[in-house]
Image (tube, rainbow, N blue to C red; front, side):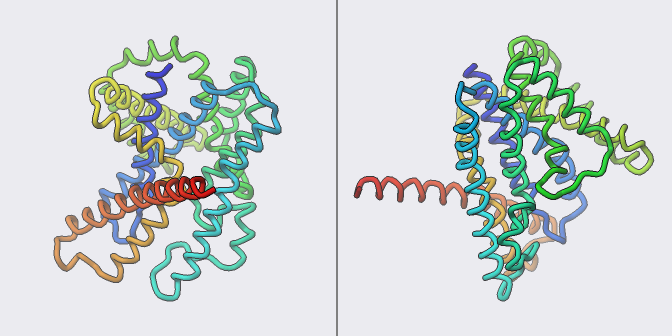
Length: 331
């Protein structure tokens, strides 16, 4: 069990880096970077949902529904509201002096109750709470299997879904959370079979599936395209887990780094766009393109923005923990 959790933690560490990269999309991005972002978006959030479902099922304890929901409310909803209001305040204060991506208004303070108005990336927190409202009613293996089937059908059937209350992203990602629960309950049997497949075969499958989505995106039946995207996400998850397992077994320093990133992944997710946005505003005010060729300067900007998006939230987290300790010591 501990090995599986280490693999999942490393996968979360890898995934949060991909999230930070994926959310840095300046207007002057070269074509290769757009392709990289497109590839990342094929599987990185399904991977996060899979990891959340796996950990939930593997660690769940008997508790009343009210206590469970209240715990998740404190963990997800309160930070969602706090971070949303903080982002809105920062954007409103900055928009007169600096570039602000996806500007907001005063109405955004209450719009966050039904859409992630402060920043679309917060849909993940909103959807995760909706899932935790549902999942306790599917506690047995048979019920998990039933929900897996229902969520799969809902995912691949091409029906219009409202974005209000994040129903559309819930439709798109519920399956992967339940799939994580499914893998968790049969993990020993499934992982023995999964680990036998060579990662190169998986990479080739991923490339073929990705090319199919690019070549036939406008000509394939929507249902078929949805199925290809589903397979693409599952293969991407599989590849990441195999890389994570390799790092867990064969490296110590990288293993430690990615496990630490997993510990701070929630904080990074909540705050990374603010630090990236600040870096992006600085690049607009003080462009570095005059000092380096275009591709090199762009890579430098990406590196700085991604490092800011990771290091900034970690610094906030550690500072907050120190303040809490100081307050406790005085009390």
